[in-house]
Length: 265
Length: 255
Picture 1 (cartoon, helix red, strand yellow):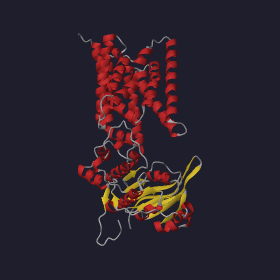
Picture 2 (picture 1 turned 30 degrees about the vertical axis):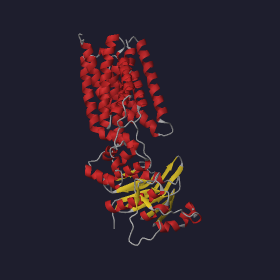
Picture 3 (picture 1 turned 180 degrees about the vertical axis):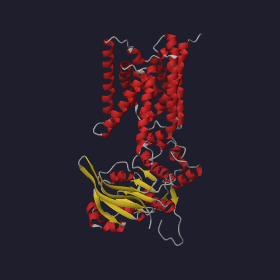
Picture 4 (picture 1 turned 90 degrees about the vertical axis):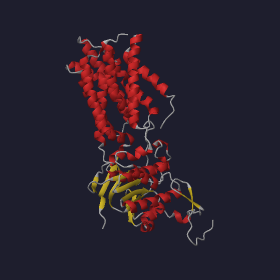
């Protein structure tokens, strides 16, 4: 079988994203931030359309909107009269609706926009120049995660305890949200806005039973992510299915397989 | 004269137009045990959180010794099951402690056998002692314990308070703790502060127990309701295992 160039690029892109989504996904699971991941993902559509409007790199648009969303979330959470759950619901769907309206306006002005590509990913159309961008971003994100890992862990265990032990919890939380925004921006190309949270949560959840320490869970999540990406891309070649959903389907399949494993700790 | 670790002056706090803390002043010195008592809703936990710097007071001033290391044992704590972590790793988090130190402190607190277990799998009483061990491993200047005896039976409670006071002697740290029962902590504390939004009374435990403000809050129910004390023919160690009494020469009591 001749492996086409675009498949190689797709696999490399998937591997790079999984390297960062694995560890971050574990933290999302530990801190129960899945809904926050969803809200960020939904805001990505708005970020993309604004970026197209102002002729910027879509990655930058998505990150900027992600940062705005995180900021709004922190501000709204400070007043404790609404739960984070409700606030996230408002921000998440507000951003999604705004993104869809923006895209429609731009389409009516004659812009050609591949909405399906944004919603469900377009890993097979990744270019070499995108890969260079992507690897730079992934290296920075990985470096930040490993630098802050102990603090991130302390905050995941207990925020108040971490605060008493001298960790600047607010800074860690802020940086973590920014990292999430970055990962959402890069994962959008792989599985699409709708399924980004799946790429964070499912490999991490599958990794749980194979791990005795937080670090081994992060590594196992990367491994599960790698298998999902490879399986998904190959399956989409074989049966001509959309790549993003195929990747997620493989990861779901692996998750159920992982349930047969006895817990180690 | 021992040096002060933490000093609060005229602390006041309102939440939703309700006065939670009113004009509280206190100071904790190294080697000293200060116990906060007060009925439910009297602001004990809130005061502790203000002192820890977790919430900001509306009024007053908080002074801390420079580079104060705090060992905090929260009242309740839940670690998500999805986070794989052994007790040992939990103790080690964020510090450089060698195995000897960890084993020493873990055995002092009777949690040595739990080190390799998942931190979510231990019982409530065990987890309290793990939290205490974790606080001690940081070599704190001050130990802050919010209702440390919660979920521990009466015998275990007395032992826990004895342990806290021996920790104070061994480590020379100051201790701030919250308790709901003055009589249980009486022997293990130097100073008691009775709180009900404002400071009702403060002083040595015996003095506080006779103070009219204290009696008004807690009543004199103990006169009418004798505390049931039964003579054990054995004791429990910290993990609840039965240990035989070591008898002194001339020990006469019945078994």
